[in-house]
Amino acid sequence: MHGDEKRHVPAATVPRLTLYLRKLRELHAHGVARVSSKDLAAMIDLNPAQIRKDFSYFGEFGTRGVGYEVPRLIAEITRSLGLDRTWNAVIVGAGLLGTALARYRGFADQGFRLVGVFDSSPGVIGASYGSGRVRAIDEFEAFCAQERVDIALVTVPAAEAQTTVDRIAAAGVRAVLDFAPVRVSVPAGVIVRQVDLSSELMILAYSLADDGAGGDVS
Amino acid sequence: MHGDEKRHVPAATVPRLTLYLRKLRELHAHGVARVSSKDLAAMIDLNPAQIRKDFSYFGEFGTRGVGYEVPRLIAEITRSLGLDRTWNAVIVGAGLLGTALARYRGFADQGFRLVGVFDSSPGVIGASYGSGRVRAIDEFEAFCAQERVDIALVTVPAAEAQTTVDRIAAAGVRAVLDFAPVRVSVPAGVIVRQVDLSSELMILAYSLADDGAGGDVS
Image (cartoon, rainbow over all chains, first blue to last red; front, side, top):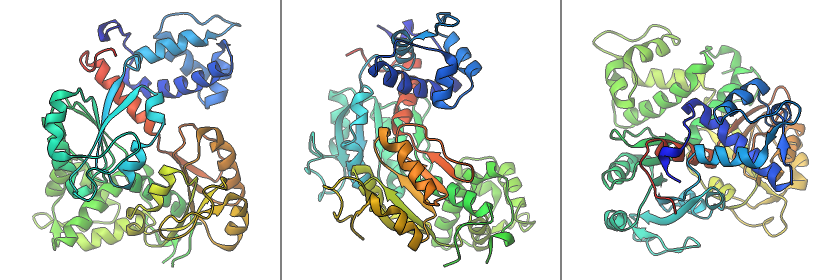
């Protein structure tokens, strides 16, 4: 299978496709062979018409009164998301968050293979993270020249995030998932997404405070 | 200070306010007293007109050619986000991710106080997470009756997420940050936000695959 055979779905659909895929895999694991858009909609709290529209990108194979074939949907979504291959990932920053992510079993289940963990601190380099040992960041470029690295998860402190991402991009890695609480810029051709935990907490705090209820001043 | 004195800003502004606040605190720490919308825009990769519009909710105190007073902006945004008080947080699920979050220093810096970590597994209950010991989930309701809990971070496995969130909501906690890779539903009056790591990875994989380049099939 190659990328150019993949059917193109609009980017806005992608977050929903990840939800469908997860639920469909769960149904498949429970032996469910078919599902209607209505039942699926109820399970994941979406509109049935939205689901039918999203699935129409895979061709017309939903049958009224019978529903969609679960295994076929799984195959189509997997292919559309580019999950029908293995993506090699590294983690840069072997602090508590980086180490927790290195041990996160969910990655392998989704077709992501952790091929390396890097850090700049001599106190951390060489430490075990379960399936390997932390490498020195100074070896990063040589590592990328030897091994294909598709995605870098960046878990360094905020002050080091931009220089780290610059280094990752210069080494030819084309996708970055940034956990540092700071926006980073990347050259054209590199994709970056941010997981910003303290921002999420601030948004929750705003929602609580905005209700007029919530915590006392302490 | 009370919630009803807080100026109301539109919810859509909130994610940007968190960005401004972080950058302004950084400037303040470096002794910068004033900043123009143009300079701030360049620092955080936003449009200056957008920034002026967002700041207009705090009243007109930007002066052309002189800029905004950094300390005053920090105070206004802090107040608008409800960060002028302490929010009590718990973590439910003391696996690797939960434990990493429990040790994450960024929370305290933002006014969030971790008051408890809970788990259902006898092998984990009683273990240290740095500033305390993991409590049994069976004590959760009694704990919430004694101590104000504003926000729960949920780091349990997907299969336990909904029942865990139901329990948290029933105990009177009004904000949930869900790290489990599954959508949960909450009763009216409870706010939930999701941090979905495997979904973020899938979106990156889609972007890489969609470029037509990316990894080999392996």
